Image (cartoon, rainbow, N blue to C red):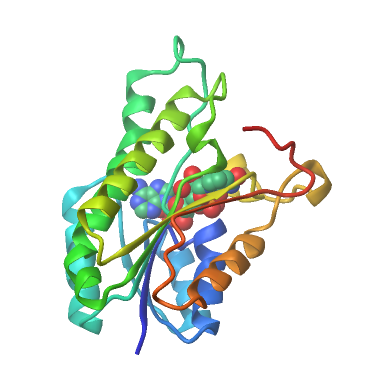
Length: 227
Ligand SMILES: NC(=O)c1ccc[n+]([C@@H]2O[C@H](COP(=O)([O-])OP(=O)(O)OC[C@H]3O[C@@H](n4cnc5c(N)ncnc54)[C@H](OP(=O)(O)O)[C@@H]3O)[C@@H](O)[C@H]2O)c1
């Protein structure tokens, strides 16, 4: 039995990745705050689901305990939960900056930390969803960008400290999800669909365990190739 955990699985990329991993034969544990949406994903994937707020240490630890009690092992962690915050750095509020760091940066760190002993045991894989902006600068999105640069630093440090686990920084460009409000944008506007990201994840998990893909940036052919 191969066990995958997906955070932020109620919507968007996490939902699509969960559906794809179920098709790949993984037993799934999924978490997010919207239990009604999670339940719907669980029905389609036969997943174990539970409330998860990655911005709270207790919530992450309780989630991990439940998952490990249920399955006893974890082979793959998709640390995907994330939020966006806009605004120039001289306008973004303290509260918003703190919120985006709590979810995208500390939430990612907490999620990996909670499952690390199990991942070490299984010599498993972490796929952390950052963004194509994790090495770029976007005026008007400084807090979000900083949260993803920091996530990248955390991941690389985890990799050096834990060579028995494989850490992949997954860096999609624009994806048509709730991240931008209501989904429904056309591919020609530069957006991929969550299913496109799920296909990339599917290709990664099919690779042999002795291959460590450390970073993967990919975008729609309609998005400008900015670096
Ligand atoms: N869309 C893009 O263009 C794009 C591009 C590159 C990278 N990304 C990254 O992809 C990831 C997924 O985003 P998405 O585009 O799929 O957006 P989305 O449709 O808004 O989905 C975000 C997911 O994260 C969950 N989430 C948010 N806060 C959470 C918290 N405190 N605890 C647990 N789960 C939480 C949400 O679930 P609940 O609200 O139910 O908790 C939801 O399932 C994010 O890390 C984002 O930064 C997105």
